[in-house]
Length: 120
Image: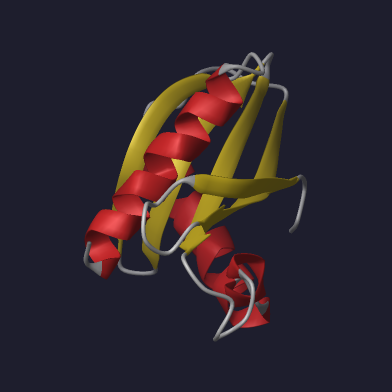
């Protein structure tokens, strides 16, 4: 599995995880000049932008380590573009979350999922 496929697989896992907890998928993979918004979900009346990181090894750190200050800045810029360009559902608030998915190296079985809410 290449990195693009791994990313898509991690997003699929995150969507299922969130939907099981009452979230509703609004959009996936919104691209703009600042980067990509992986998942746009709705939880109640709150619009939730979710950055998904999946890894098969901690060799380069945990998945959530990749969501650093610079990444958060780009995500916030991309959210602003999304809100300006798209017909977002009416909402009372916005939130930026991250989901880290640890996968077993050989089988890609989910070892752990960590959901970080309101990261920036």
